[in-house]
Length: 282
Image (tube, rainbow, N blue to C red; front, side):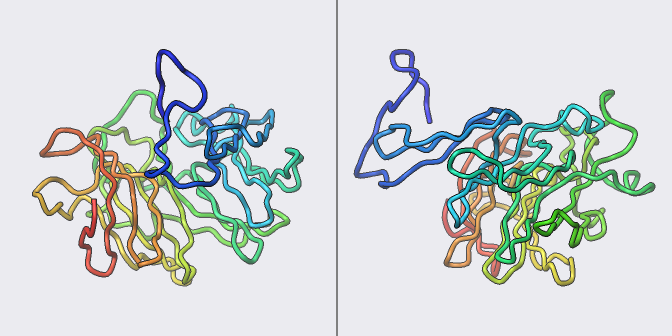
């Protein structure tokens, strides 16, 4: 994706030897459209919904699963990046065939083979937890409470099957908020993926940590983040996004690198092996 002065819209450049044929699905954050492009940059199809379309996924049945724009009544959570108010399943003609509304959902979700749906959501943490969380700084716009991340599973009827609450499994000594971020939320999860064995891969931006959760126990099977130094001597993760499981058993992620401690800000894409904590490629 790019912008040019002479051609601000449409296909700007393509190297067919370096690109893969097929379709590209994209949407803007807090927009109302999702667009499907072919290899030549032509619009093949567009979905539209007045409640908004963001964070889109194509389902096996060909429908589009999307999150809407946030509500205006989420006690301030709507101001946090990634916030949404509902999950909508749209058919090819943008008709809603399923929906689930939750003012506190955000960022990512997964449709399970059972037909249930997992999604990230914020929840006010219990009294006494906020005081034990380290890092961050107070900001005048922060609420009196601290938001914590949960993973909720709902069935097709929208009934809650289970909730996983991050603060019941995080470590106060290890999972510390970046000092340059406010204390309105602890971890700011920004991606969620279900692994082939059913475990959950999650990315926590404010603590610069990726982790694998065992849904049977709720415990972390693996955590990797700022305490692991890069081979070149630079910092570990810094506010990463998009943790993705690869077939060979590595985790691919985008390390934003915006608040590095001992190096200038820079971004990178890397693969880490959860079995060894070794970076195999970057």
